[in-house]
Amino acid sequence: MTTDTRPKRTLSKDTLTKFRQDAIPEWQKTSRFRLLEKKYGKYLYLPLDVPRIVPNDSQLFKQWFLDRSKPIYKRMADIANPNQIDSYTIPSFLSVDSKNLLEVWTTGAWDANPVSDMYEIFPEIKEQIDRYLPFKSLEYYSLWSSMWTVSPHRDATPLCDMPYAFRINLYDENPTGTLRLHKGLPDKEYNDCESKLIEYFDSNAFAWNNLRALHSSTKDTQYMKILMIMASTIRNKPDFDKMEALFDSSIEKYKNMLWEDTSELGDYIHVSTAN
Image 1: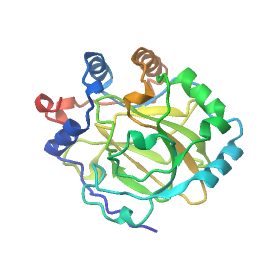
Image 2: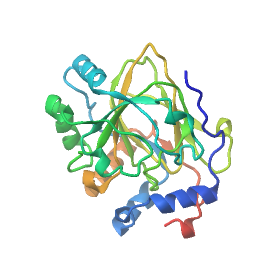
Image 3: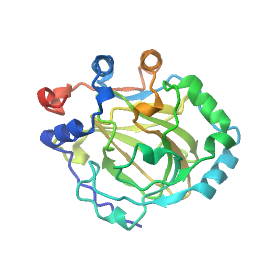
């Protein structure tokens, strides 16, 4: 088993501010998007008020993934671990990526495994995503299945201040949740961070605030899980009106399950210089 060499402390405010400055694209600087950040930034975790999004035949989907997936290696250090070296030679997860992912991931820290036929073989997945999620055309995504337990970290994107790290738990054999979020205030030992285990109820789609929260996962080799990750790109054509309506209904429906932050954005980054 690989040794996880990620840091044991959260990033400093200076460092997180710099990562955000470098990662925020122009389309996330618009007044419309900034209003969404102001309204929803405090929600660290938000289950989405949509029916469960699943393939018609879960075992066929699992076999398709096993046939198409490949172990993925890290190509360079990033926000998750600026000093990481072990993943250059040891794969972290199995992956199937959309055929065009590298068009928007040319500077990504990970390799990709482009596969073109998921929506052709499982059109019901695309139909459900188009119907329920706030994207007009979600064509850039990854399907990941972790090979090892993963310690707390942020992803390189999105670093906007709202729950924009969208996920669908498409296939899961685990009897209990394996994903945990950690409140990522600066300069804290991971063990001292507040955390929340993510469990699924009547929805398997959710989003979290990757700027404020770290995430980790456990791995039991008896069980398999396949998580769909939506790339944070304007090419997925986010529908902000639909997003706002979905977030509002999700907050109302899951008010006892979501995770609301009591800290301010300025507790994480230098607000005056991070926009």
